[in-house]
Image (cartoon, rainbow, N blue to C red; front, side):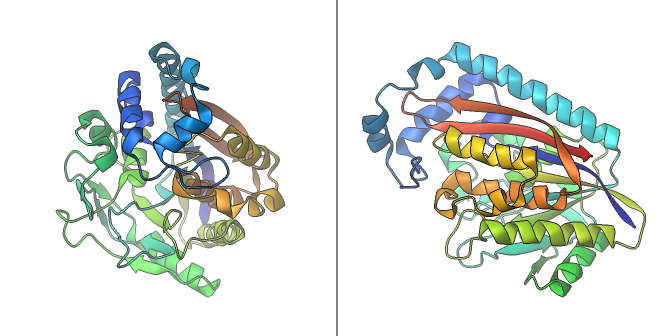
Length: 335
């Protein structure tokens, strides 16, 4: 039978895979971002955000402060990588979202599972060169494994088992067997970050579980994400072969406007294992980058028999106006 050996939560934004000077460069690109949502859940321009906040976060957006936080990120990543290796998983199931890397608005499933034997990373999205917001940042692309079409092992049998098991548990799941044209799109950064930042060679087989967190009209409500996580745990345990499974929540917490109140509310619920609090997180705040909190809800539900052994929360402000990310890293372990 399958054994869920470790649960991991990790942010996957570009600041996770690059150095602090690049964080400031990304901050410059925030000025033209179309993805900013303020802490009330209202879409805003950078100019509107700057008028509202003034220089409120100027002391946080210095290179010296960002370099300290960058070192903290590297420390947490190294800790996760060591604990991941110690858990010795046979396969990794990653809960992530797609940002026009494999899907687009012509076909954006609410839930999809990739069951191909091989994963192929994308270098192009269906909206052009990956990282239009961070164009030309080669260190970011390398950190995601998206600097070239990298090929990583999948796990067809577990993928098929998860699909059929979730359908039996009343989830409508899209099934994805492969990447038809890597030049047009492929496996994106939510999954590539796990391959590149947690794994050495040889790579461990990975099963991507796509949850549409970003894109209306078919985002899963928080409570449905929790149900999905519970069903995934049941499916993993019911797998007929002896296999050690690591489960990873990729993404989050708040961004592209750092919302410490939302992040701390989420973390309090995660630490307490409070299902009701996670299900009641306000959906109107879970848009744009904040939406990836949904991936953490899925993993928290799957790890409900475990406890959050540790977490590291790093509220980053890369501009004085308050754009940034609530970078967060965590591990669930047996109670």
